[in-house]
Image (cartoon, rainbow, N blue to C red; front, top):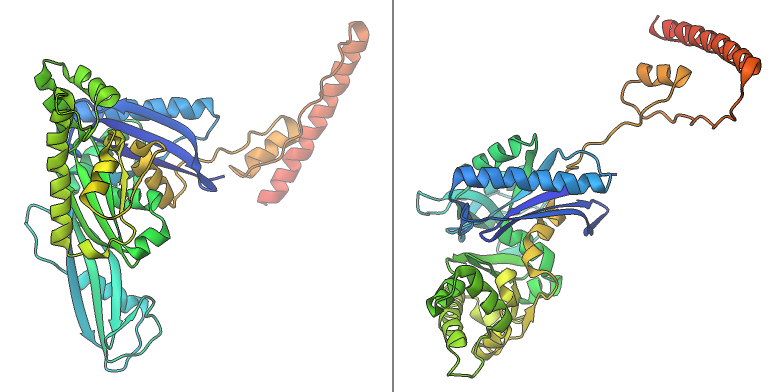
Length: 415
């Protein structure tokens, strides 16, 4: 059996999970640890602290795996996100003069596609390809001849190299590798969006602790991605002005807070309203900039740990005439569950079956790590006295004869 393992490093908490490739929604092992001050707005802030926490998280995951009798952990898939993550549209064209489109040509176009961006950002991925052959849209253009081919992509920019290096170093302490990385908001979309929502057009809002991700989909493809550098922690810190510790403020927000409760005399909800309105205003401003405001027929999908805030979905409905669907089942796990969906390689080590005694022990030695079905010894009744001595002597003779047969078979095999 093969398994997928994933790691999500959030501003508030770090989560690691293992699932079977055949049923990725059934979680076999899960571990979680508070991020503390090691992660800020989705990026590693305190390297030493983050490294120690990641290593501790993996140790906890391994312990959970051991309880489930799972094989050893070899590698994990990791989500890439953080402040600064954004997309830019890019297009490139090529004259084919009647030649046929093939996969090699499409790869060349993807490599050639460039977009201007701030030099401080790196290209993380190029996604959502659309191909126009002589002006006609073709989602699968391979094997078609045309005069001119136009390719359109969304290039995802962000901070990547340093983040990946630090994660690899931390995982290395536990002899675990990075199998691959995926853009976190794309993983979230994989987990929570339906094909119909992607096709009709929707805005996916992941309301996290330090950041809010906005992803816009239309005609099945990602059209726009941006990060708003505000999240649930901003609301919590505002509540601290009520002479509360941060832990008290967080608890108060979750248990008693509500967006637009209508109670103007309630100081708590007045604070929540002010900051939430700022975040939502930024979301709608980004939707306007994207140019897809009129294309969101499927409305808004709301997820992320901070999306649990009471009344947040009602606020979005009031600000727009679109439907709002909130993920109710563990919204803070949307990203890591999406990573489990995207992963492809086996992340756990297969363990060979141990052989047992005599000829079967020799067979296990001869054929290396291949699994050898070995018979289990039957329990023998207790025998005393001279009868037991006779049985032992006879058993020794049989064992010696079996060993000789095995040696001869092995010699013949290698000759």
